[in-house]
Amino acid sequence: MREALDVAEELQLDLVEISPNAEPPVCKIIDYQKFLYQQKKIQKEMQSNTQKVVIKEIRFGPNTDDHDYNFKLKHAIKFLEEGNKVKAFVFFKGRSIIYKEKGEILLLKLAQDLEEYGKIDQLPKLEGKKMQIIISPKTTKKK
Image (cartoon, rainbow, N blue to C red; front, top):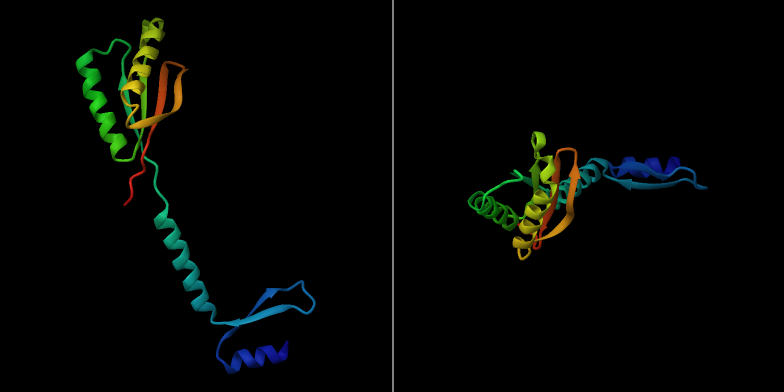
């Protein structure tokens, strides 16, 4: 062990213990600051390559008219083309909860209209006063 420390000092490098439990302990002579720098660089590069998932929300009412539906459909298409997920939901206010079927039909119609732009991650599901559907883009956008 003393010989290794002397060699490391002579080369002006650091002696790093790799496996302390081995018999004899395994050590490596390296420039530790350079090693840390390279590790940070690799980690930064990996982080920049990861793709951020953005979820855009579109809100409907159970009695949404065709014009409003088409307007929101265009926005959903734009979101999917940009590579974002779309979370469309129908919000039932007060007694409008009795129109659950209308809400489900509306969301299924939206999913059908967006079929060529994205795929369904989650079918219409009622959670409290919200019925929602999640659609993700078919092609991933490369930066």
